[in-house]
Length: 396
Image 1: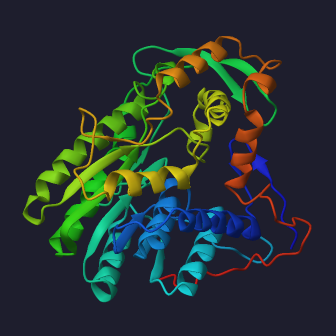
Image 2: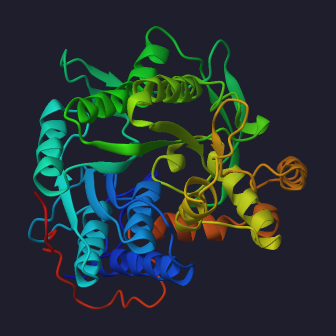
């Protein structure tokens, strides 16, 4: 079939298998050009099919020749209906990993559930014995608690007071004012339950109980802080409370890993175009300006560049891992440089529908958004008929 992008708001309803494959190949090739990493050898990635999770799986496999198990929830294809982007990403990743002689298997299902956790544990026992790294990179807006069956939904809201600022519709380029009412009722608790550290700890506790964690085991979860500009709706909003909980959980997990000399870390990553970030008001405008500045300063990074630097320069140097006073690894250091943030602050004041095309990089944002779903990828012929019915080779 011929597959074209169909969008609704910040979601693309279709995905292109060839474009997704090319995206994965580009990331693999980048890792290969950066040299070997003396890193992990048996890796579980929870949330492995897109964004930072996919980049972590690629970096582990093609940087460290690691065996990888990926867990995710993606939509498979049906005749005439393409699969989700993460499905096609995983097809491409597994094919290339197997060509390289690397172990790679995947589990598709609700990572919050006891069923998927048990299935993953059985696979590790059967094939790998023990693992030395768990990447936790879930970004779901909904969680059904595995013990109570209660469904929780996260919200993007400020706390205590409403928030107003500029935002941009990245499809049209229109800059406008947006107001977001503050969290009410159980909004904060629900968001923390979905996006905090509770599920991360459940995974590590379950793996440790089965003696599946190797000596010097490490686990990494991903977070974001961002500038003062986005604080009210992000770091000091409901999501920020969830991130606070996630970061506090790292210390709790580390305490449980002392007997195997293990550690849990939170890596604070750079603002990037992801399916999750596209949904957050204000963030698309901020990223458009950020991209412009960082590209001009030649310090721009995508997911794969961020994770390669995290592995090569922070996690696996043979030295003690540098963290900030709160114990976090800061791979957002280039984004948060004073010169970068000062430039964005100045541009923000002048950002309008008319000025944004010249002072920002809305085109870069727009392209990156469609790239997430395999569209607008250089080298792909979108007029070509493609097979939408691709299967993940080692789907368990």
